[in-house]
Length: 446
Image (cartoon, rainbow, N blue to C red):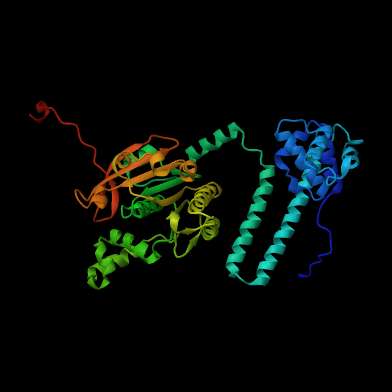
């Protein structure tokens, strides 16, 4: 394969197609108004055409007719008339232009040429990054894959016509009948009953104060989904994979958890039980630890989805994930939006464990509404379900150590409210409280 590139060759474009599209808009072609929905000024290569289209689109967005006279006035007002080719060029575009023509076909040519130019520019940028050798190859490669994927998604979006209601209904009923729809449960009966399980495309937030057990609840959810045949990518920026798995092994083996930090105190029976528990660990669920970034998480999640299947993605926790942004709020917004985008792309739920910025006190803690937790930020907007986990003993160091409460602060398809639960200090699991049995009348006892 030749590696030589002829940089003297002109960039892909079609002057006739660009002029035909502009002419159809100027003379009022009935189908021309749809072109504004999926063409941008950057899709045009010739500078004059780019300026004219931007002006016509601006007129259309302001509710003004994008005809030749209005375009001429607007270009004169903004001082762009000469740069747009002048009066003669603008009038020429509408001359001899048929009122009816295949403007959609010509617009598609303009778009395709723009995509080809984008690929050339991207390839050139990748070449410069590779020649500069200032970053690791996997970083350059991941950025390149994401950029090419974005171009592909944009190209597919132009062809996307959505799904008709009947097809959506039939698809839903097929999921009901076949049981193929993803549903992830926490193993807390009352919570699972109210949420109906976490579903494909949903962003779920677990939030609590430090030490309450957000990660434990996420691990518990992972174990339950694995028992149901649903496999997970658990991304931990807080713990190494060995630390994360030690909790689960101790629980499954019935070994006291403190011994996992003091292995010299393990008895031969403990070791035998741990070996037996390790042999039953899932060979498909994965742990991604170390320095986390959304690009790294995205790459590994896509690979797992393609190779072995992915039904649940857990990110623990958002403040430990590297993300672009000038401020912390910009970074948090990027992570949440990326998590929601991944949930839609991979057709699985994404759980993001989110640290509270400050402790809740008084009324805020008694009734931790979505507004009190996050205000009107990106987390509140993009999430489908928000769970607040509270254990009074952790904050007050007094009272019942097993007392726990889970508040559903947001639930798009169900009820919100508080659920009383129990925290098992031996197994480090959240459990449902047994429902009180109704008292039997005296005559039954007699």
